[in-house]
Image (cartoon, rainbow over all chains, first blue to last red; front, top):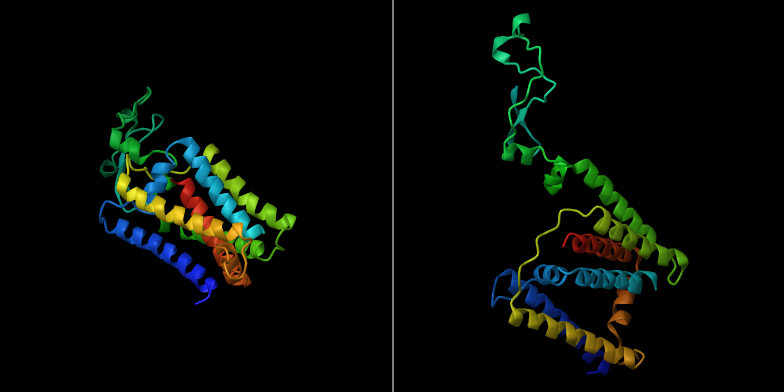
Length: 66
Length: 189
């Protein structure tokens, strides 16, 4: 197994964990919040809202303008 | 006059005449001259539930599929924009402005004319939220370790793995549509 494969497996594992958390959150298991819930909570203050929107803009610039 | 109308959402609502209108009853035909009041006619007070129904803009309360023509035009515009942006040359001014423009538009909408926002929760469970923080931190750490090594082929960054996947024009355009929709969803939070 190459280091590249290990790296890819690592990314896939973390992303799979994120998807699993979302599924568990939607099923109301272990009081795990969904992405929508914790994003809404983080975006309650104006600073949190600005940071999240800036992150969204950075993501677009990173993948679609470069 | 009291009339019963059926709105776009299918719910019946009552409307009351304005102060410049003469109250009429349809079952009695047109009023006789001696029935027409000479002074100003005051409409009965509007009940709170009626005021809620008549609140402007009424169409803001409509469900998503209530205006298919408008939604189709917006959808076509978003897809067309994503297709154009997906075809721009990377690192070009067009590509940069193409990304910044939606950000500016959403920023103006968010602060000048915010849409009806989805109420955020009062609190989130700390333990449940910590799982998210741990996974996101792991993702960033895994990515940072690759970026620190200049993303060699044996230890690529997530960016270097994703960029070839969104290389084809249609897939890149679809990814841009998802990105735009995510931005709109964030504005509504």
